[in-house]
Structures are given as structure tokens and as C-alpha cells.
Length: 368
Ligand SMILES: [Zn+2]
Image (cartoon, rainbow, N blue to C red):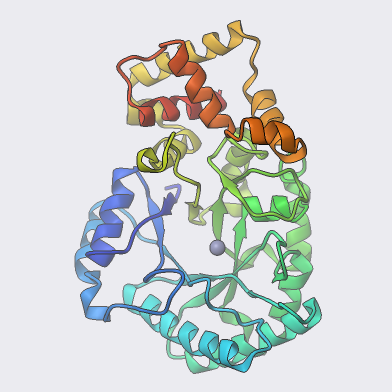
């Protein structure tokens, strides 16, 4: 079974809350933070509803999920207090990950701040050596995430990841989380050359290391070094390029996790698009949303065709304007999905549908 899901909330009843949310999107895997990503406050392990969550997972055939370490962990820091906190807190997170029954904890390798990349690689490897030794009683892997290269992030190239892995003495518990938005933003052209990029990864790091794939579209063109996620189809990668990632034999069996933004005309109306993104990528949108959904997408398609609007061209031209034309952006900062939604509303195309349902149909149009 294809393992596909999204980031879900771990608040309230912990694993039980997370599993139920994931199932509501039709997920077959999911990813959690064990607490707020910005701080180190965590609940006791026996307050995480682990047996209850695992029971719901088992009922729905979910056998693999992923934990993401918080962003405050920076193993690349030259400041002793930041580095020590990172080393200690990552160990605790690994023990929690083990208790939840999860094999991979995703980690942003770190940032070198005022030093340089070589320093960052060395420091991160030093921290990983310490953490892996101290948690040798667990079988949790640390999945180093491929980064977009914004600021002083380490892990923006396959070579940097390989350099970290090489410097870790016992690196058997190091894996990789491949993020589609990040590698695209870092300059790897997976739209036009997915095979070539994966071959390059294989040569430099080794495909066996990939344990998790983050499925995010990007608001920026290839090589932008930015890291701003877009819903699947609403960015520079596009639905079809992302579907090729999911279907690629070199990545078969891995959990594919969406971390795409919620969409809505104002903050209160924002809703996750995961259910539609998952069904469209998996190819069971009719079973999930019914025949009427497909008819609505057809209607959308002819509505835009009448106005000579092509989905890909439109999305890319809006992002290009927002990026290159400050004046136009100031006059109209709306992103592609917001603009499309308003066109549909102005034309009264779907009077009976909610904003969320209309946005789900826009994603269906992107996937045609
Ligand atoms: Zn991440």
C-alpha cells in the first residue's frame, strides 16, 4: 500500500488525536511533532495516548508514521549553550520517538550562523556522534532533511549531507528525509530531470538512506534558495511532477508526507487541502469525493478554457509577477489559488459549495 499522509496535530490526546485526524484525510501514514516545534515543553509519555492511538492506526492499516524534531534544535551552533541544548533535547526526543513506536525522526541538520558551512558540517557531525552514542539502546534513526539553502542552513546539497554522514563514526542510524520543495529550491530540477537528480543522490549519498519523503510544492523557481511550501499543483513543481515522485520506483515504500499550507480567503477560513491532495496523488479521487467532484472539475476546466486560462501557465505567471514585480505585488498580493477562487466566486460557478470544497476542485483542475 502506498504510504501517504500529512503533518497532523499531536495536541490534546496525542497519538489518538493525530491518528484520527490523519484518517479523516484518507491517510495511510502521518507525521507529528511531539510538542510545539518552537519549544521544549513536552507531556509525559504516559499522557500521549500511545496504546489508544496505535489501536486506531492498526484498524486502518497504518503501520509506519514519522516524528519531526523541533526547529529549536541547532546542532550547527558554535554557542555551547545552544549546542548542548540541542544534543540533550534531541536525545529526549529520540526516546519519546521510540516510546511512540516510530522508526525515523526527521531533523533539520542545523545552521552555521556566524561561522561557515565546513564548520557547520563538522559541528553537526560532532553532535550526531554524541546523540547516537547516548541513544544506542533505541532503534530510532535520525533522518537528516535536505534543506532549501535559506540563510545558513546546512544540508542544502547532497554533498553536504554526505559530508555529515561520513564524519559520523557509526552512521547506521542516519537516514535522509528528501523534501521536494527544498531540493527544488536548492537547485535540483526534479520537474525536468527527476531520474538524473535521484541518480545523483544515489551516487553521493545512496538511495537506501532515504527513509521519508516530504511532498511539498514550491512558491519559488528552481534554485531560489527560499523554502516556501505551496499546495500540490499550486507551485513551481506542479501536480504531475509530484506524482512522478510518488510513483518513482527508487522511492517505493517510503512514507510520503505533505506539509503544505492551509488555504482560505482569511485566516479563520483556512482549511488543510490534504484530503484532496492525497486523493489526487494516489489516484482515488472519485472514490473519496464522488462522481460530482469530477463533474465540477470538468466545469471548472471549461470555465477557464473559455477565458484562455491554462492552469500551469497561470500559476507560474502569478508567482513570477509576485516575485519580480514589487509594484504589481503591492497592488495585488494574492496568490494563485486565492485569485482563482475569487474568479470562480464572481462567476457564481458553484453556489452550493463551501470555500474549502471549491479549493479542493481547483486542485483537481491542476491535476488534469
Ligand atoms: Zn522539516
